[in-house]
Figure 1: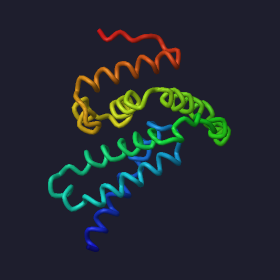
Figure 2: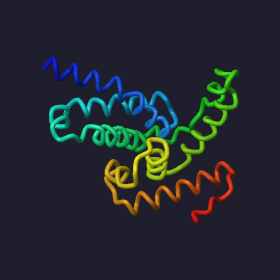
Figure 3: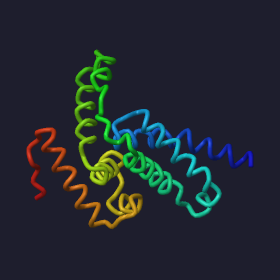
Figure 4: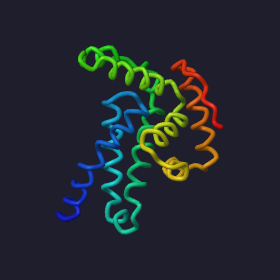
Length: 167
């Protein structure tokens, strides 16, 4: 039991930061991202023995954090408006441009539907392939492609970016 706990703790130290960043980009709130990460790590811990044997650890952890964020978005408080970005910008005046850009992107991401947001974050932040993203979300590759395309188009519109030719 002790060895299992030590192995899990080692995994959690390495994986939690990336999981939390992914969750943050999906929900736009660090507190909710941390909650989702903790929920996901609990799920991983419960299946730890089985996951180590079949090698699906990273995939399961990613799927768990995405599911936790999506579950949160279904709760009653999901209609709260993303706020507090001004305080984030003011907190780092020496890096104002970087923080301002991040805040704008996070705010734009928060306006995407959960499925599109998940696809865009997993594909372009977490750098998963279409197939990996489909596996994590429990959907087909075609759905990932269309959700990603729609999400990117909406982000371009929200951020007033020119359309990109796919040729």
